[in-house]
Length: 114
Picture (tube, helix red, strand yellow):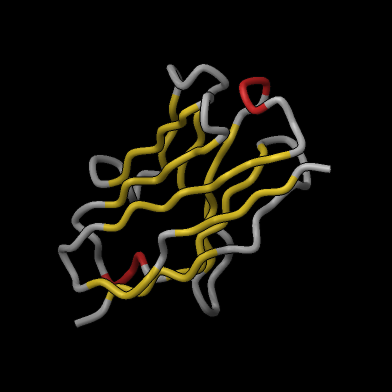
């Protein structure tokens, strides 16, 4: 059974930064493609970023390109989402997931507000 545990969310002012982490267990981490989704109140779920098994291939939503960076450390079974230049519209619950499966984390709240 794959388990994903996110951390790193919180309250930050506009223009600030946060780094989310997602620790995986129960699988061979280097064999899976990972990603982050987010869901804001009253809005549809949005794919934020994905990263290939080795980390060399990434994909971003247009809304976060140039501001967010997804990375992974296969030795630590962890995927990260570095979020810079945060905007109020980035406020959402952020979930990590295993691409192509139904394995999701419990989510971590990110609130961007002054």
